[in-house]
Image (tube, rainbow over all chains, first blue to last red; front, side, top):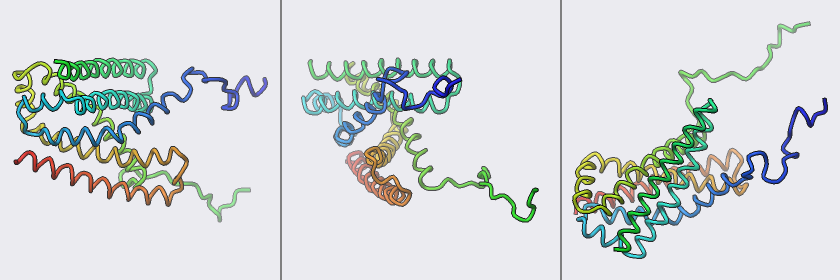
Length: 128
Length: 133
């Protein structure tokens, strides 16, 4: 039996590889991290200035294009980054194929739903 | 044929009850722990925004649920995000292929710890100022 039949090596991977995703997961995790290098400090500044403020003041702040926009972008980048990161953690520590796949799908679903709730909430504040 | 006088030098596995993680692996697992913690924080972030969009009643419920333990959670969120932020920058530098040798990695590790402490102090300090004023 020749070596290529028993031991597939990195050099024989073609195109995007067997997962058909290439390095997308790795690359998007880094891109969202770079986005958050800018967005996280702005979001933390926003949250700190809103501590103890009454409802109307918080709504007014988040309705502004600047701070509403920062919140929208932060939600998108952070929820996406969280999904990619949790997937790696699950893949590293959960051994069973079924359990692993189930957890990844559940977490992806949860983060998509939470992200939609967050995005629609900010949009409602900005548009009304 | 076995040579009893020169024992084979095999690597010793760590004794788990007395093993202390060196700085770099300790910082690595802390990056993961803070990351998972911050991911849990998305629940609170989504609730906060949904409550704001729903109205004063829903927001009042959120604030009452968050007091006073939520304040501690907020401080914990800031400390965790400060660590993940600083150490994440170190990871991004590694990803460019730089500072990968042990000495550079450790020096950068100490820089991360300093940055983490400074950022945490600034954030927690200003949060407490806004809280008290």
